Image 1 (cartoon, rainbow, N blue to C red):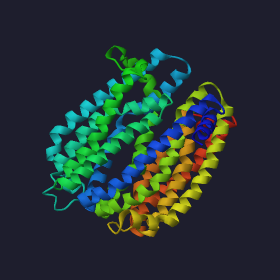
Image 2 (image 1 turned 135 degrees about the horizontal axis):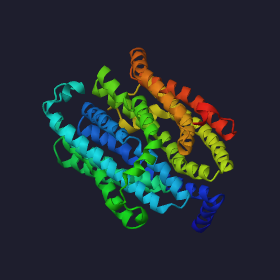
Image 3 (image 1 turned 90 degrees about the horizontal axis):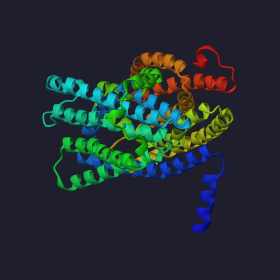
Image 4 (image 1 turned 30 degrees about the vertical axis):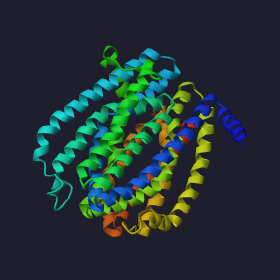
Length: 453
């Protein structure tokens, strides 16, 4: 039986275009690793909430969101590098690839150093209690807490570029492996602490932020010594003249990332300001459940970004059209799974969290709609990003980013915390329709003007 399954599995992987075969393998391994990571993440939430409390856990979630914003200040280099590496790989330009990698590390290192130099002297004067709407925080030492997270971020800001390189090199499953190991070690250490050490939010933050970073650094060293040896960064390959190539597309990606930041990453801030830290935990628990679906969809679609770049560079539009048709079918399956998730959510919450967090049904419903709308627009975004047709996306993201926060505030006054997600959902529906039209025009070679830029 095992031999039969192995033969069938190998036949599935090897069937079709070589590009498709590689994508299938990455999706298969990523599903396993991401599934394990998700399981660990689900177990980690009740352990952490019970170790501290829902309010402190909500504080950590909000704080990590704020610090995570700075990831977007790579001025679009990560996405620019992803496209340039995939393109140079398709054209066999190995030297250019190494220069792009080395130059990206150098620029991100400079940005990280500048951020530290600016933040360290001003942090003691920032009133984080007021910024985060936290009361009775004398025992938390928020300034020290923020400092730990910020320093960890600045280091991660540089080393996380390995994820972009692995994705561009058509092996995103290795990114999933690195993330899984970070999650596994973090959860193990927190579980041990919860059994033997007094409550300390600083410990939790240091583990959740620091352990995955350590794994990422170790993985980078190993990969550059072996499988990515030809891309190993070096000072002698740093050439800031190549930064122009990276930023030509990356600069637009940077503005798009800022817009995406406002669309997605401000939810916790709006909720904590309007409803307090405890409701952030409620919101994120609901999001965590439905993120199972978005995680699976992201795993499936991630390898295609660089694959689209490769195919478009080779003018293989037939393959692109076939892939997008299959993606649309997968999306319909995802819609069905999301509906099932909504109806089974109350039972899952009860089994998972007992009575530690109460989840409103309407929040769960809106979160299900968000998943459907988000995944629909994402499959077209990955295609457009991969081929560099992102000018229309730039204008739309700027427009929707400007209206998102006021719309979320208005809707949250009417629908509670679910109103924040409803704002995102309406915007993603609008974006999805426009991106679908642009994609069809490009594939039919009828795209003109802003639709072809």
